[in-house]
Image (cartoon, rainbow, N blue to C red; front, side, top):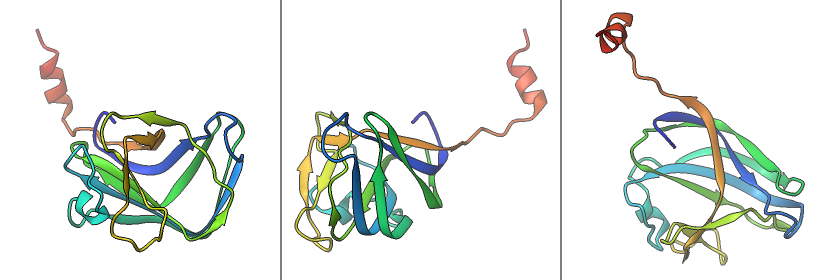
Length: 156
């Protein structure tokens, strides 16, 4: 991202024709937060800047469904303010469901993915150098300047 913004939507791109075209996830929660480091540790809570982990979306049943290479978008219940400086953490949590919605993944070269396949409440997970390609949508922050200030910048 090129600067501060209010994130109102997060999208995932279906990974070609791999896996199921649709997945259903029970007790689905989506958290967004900030991290000051560029590489994750295996302890979930340690990756967040304290106080930034925010529940931005939840539903009893989330369906992720798309055709080949199409995007699935979730509009957040609570938009998240990204400060344009730190790294963004997107955390998904669910308990059971059916099928698996596969997304395009990219090799980051560092531990930027963290998965937990045993239980939702486990404090640690398995690190991965791969992560889903994500698209963030929202309102970009613009610096506040007066017309006179802007005109002075372009004066010769």
